[in-house]
Length: 299
Image 1: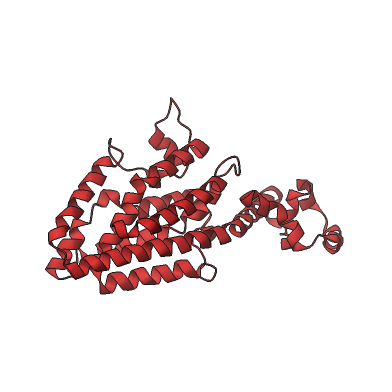
Image 2 (image 1 turned 180 degrees about the vertical axis):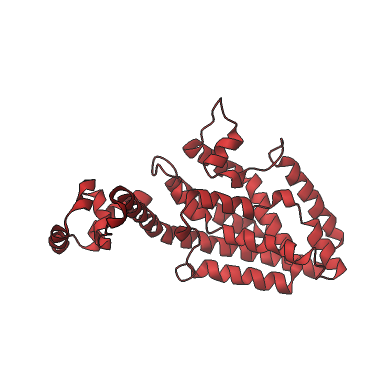
């Protein structure tokens, strides 16, 4: 996989550039992290579902099935664990990136489906890149996330602390924290050297390059859309809080009033309808109103 190294370096630098903005002191919540990781969930889900749909039903030729089976270590699978983390951290309305606003992610998803359907052996590239990443740069990212949102405690296991903080994605079952699984997986991939043809190996390398370039596009796209999602998420929480405080007779104010919590006290939410209408005519333009939350995500 040396062919993907330059692309890996580019992607790694991009992730390290954006990671600090999802951590304290830039934010006190792990929701920005959760919004970012939502873009990774469908990728794991797509290529891991290939195991379920093709190994047991015997839908593949015996040689291809041998390749796919060698890659399948159920304990390594991350889609279900990541999905549970996302459910813990985000409301349903923010768990799935919108296809309209995330065309690069949608294009990558379609490519994954097409590639695995026509060339199942390229699953080697997906499993190698997405699993091995969790044991290299992933350990660094986990340490940063723990420092920010899941500091260690003498009274609670780190695994349980991570679970409560929505960070189970980065952990593996067993006392070896996944190191044994990593070694088993690498050994299994090594056995495929004599099974794969030269043409198939070339396909895998080419797919690895495509994965890295596509991931770079997905990360850039996430960085462009997450600030607006974060504002929307916070506004939804304000509406929910007002509804709980005031009961079923509470009325949701026009959308422009929600960002005002950044410049006015919370009592502004209790303005009468007449006052609300008068205030609306004097409200700052939208770009001025939303400037503060946008700065929170990008300071």
